[in-house]
Image 1 (cartoon, protein in one colour):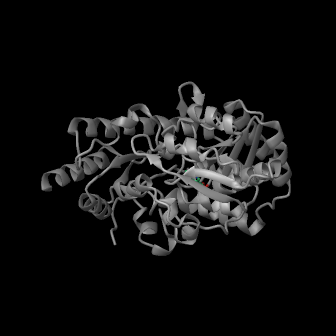
Image 2: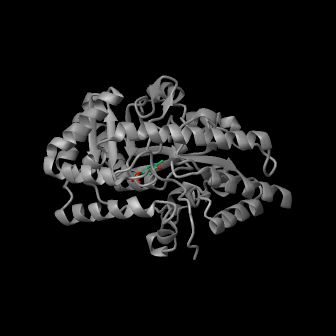
Image 3: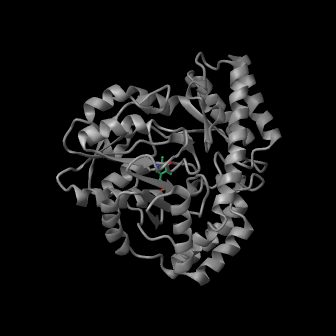
Length: 407
Ligand SMILES: *Cc1c(COP(=O)(O)O)cnc(C)c1O
């Protein structure tokens, strides 16, 4: 066990002040939820907003609503490399999954393959991901989707506060959703947001949301306690402790369809009281840190033969983690192991592509997604959150430099 400064791979700090706002939120009840909802609507210039218990809960509700709107369609097309919560939500909504491979240079869909796959008449919706905050090419998707009468759901779980040109991520497709989970743009312990301008779909969503349960008192109490625990143990000085407890499964991505689907609590809305300032402040720091990592890899050129992410134009982006390719599998393992020892916050991405999830194996028998599969084995991420100090940056840089020399 390492009892020393340890960086979490991603973090959206929760402060004591936020917890006090959360408790005040409980007193204000529905009014607090209405405030948060209307602030989101104004900020994103959207007509409809719904607040839920998580990103996957939000996605499940969206999918159920779309299926009610178009009951003859039952399949959802997603990238073969994305968060395991996405297929979890699709299965939970009672729908089928279809995969499309990736473009290794953009982390977006392979558009050639996508165009062929989208002609399947059973496809209800497509879910592009703004992975790590890198904008997926939604405008390009939009034309293909309109042609095939497919709904476009923007997975902006990792991209709250990000933009593509002058458009806010989450508002470009038909429907967008965000996550307020631990390692996301900003956090209310857990939570999810749906935004849309589509009146008909919003009506279906409202029907579903109105029938959802609220958190019980006991569950709200657990949230409060957890927010206090998080506010302390996400700090680099204390993060070694939760990290050393294997049952917390920190950073593990699991496929699980048994999650709860509830409405957000007034406590969480209260935690989000200062969200615009926080998001702006975190985003500025993340952007600076991205620029720093970008500069380092640009000067240093290569690791394992291929340039890392300059091709993504990640220089001035607001990312929640900074992705870097490591082509050599030995170097990949060494970097992660070293980082673990020195607490540098470098981390792999997902344990595999979606077709390799054990519980879903039968759905994708005989199908291969080579780019998605290789991304899972080659991508690591560097931390960019507000806790990253100059000394931490040096630690990471030294780690990469040593790796280069020893090769
Ligand atoms: C985190 C995440 C989700 C799910 O959000 P939760 O709030 O954790 O349920 C969905 N998609 C992506 C890309 C994510 O990173």
